[in-house]
Image 1 (cartoon, rainbow, N blue to C red):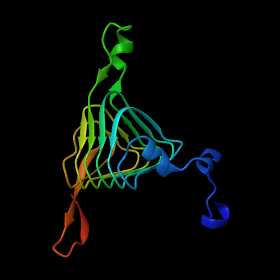
Image 2 (cartoon, one colour):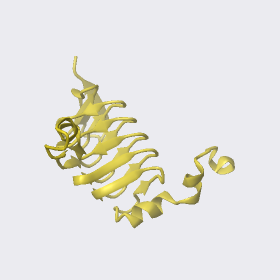
Image 3 (cartoon, rainbow, N blue to C red):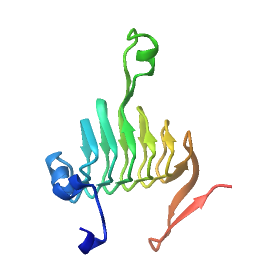
Length: 167
């Protein structure tokens, strides 16, 4: 790997093929998932998806769907539940959960967190280190903690893409 690609990876990434892992999980064609990624529960992953190293895709308590041609950058956590009420009530209240849907052609920046009951639209950009705890509509650029919509993705008639940031 060092000689061919000038990359030094954790040993497990050298032993296990990330495209095979995606096939094993029933993902769409040309999808790759790094071995260091944790995938749990009812997860549906489309085609041409790249899921980077050290990610957590946790659908242990609800459904999680990732559309086609998405990139989930290193360290991203996508979760369908939280245990806050459960813990604060000494188990008297249930674990809170809700589906998460990521649309097509969406980029999730490194170390972002997407929480339960969230839909991120298609053609979106989520900035690194963002906390997404509410829906993000199609063609949106959002970042921050909590994430706020700060711009929109625009396709012109020639297929050129621009990002228009709000002032």
